[in-house]
Length: 148
Image (tube, rainbow, N blue to C red; front, side, top):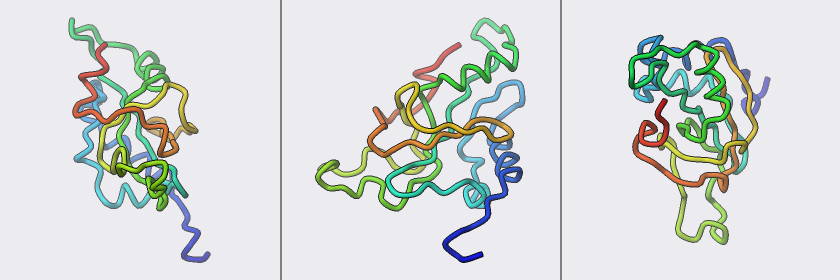
């Protein structure tokens, strides 16, 4: 196998994604738990694409009611908020399209259209690959946008 084509261990990546969430019942993504080895195991987007980990939200409502796993998982499929895990080598390089520079960077929380990007499931959740121009906004805290 050449250096340009690397094998991705999706099971190891899935375990890493699962470890980024706080308490199992809370299911709140903690980006600080994304270590370098997890990022290496995740698929690398090509060109102007970026790898986004959708926000799953809390598994308990503000009133204290625990939501079934199916409801939380279904909510992840329709979420509009995610964490930028990786960016391809051509992200935001088109100066005509992005004259003011990049709209976001790795490590940002972003808002995107509900059905934007390509989705694929890994153990522990869903990951999306979006084009650089599909980002609608950068936010500080996903809880400001999503509340169950």
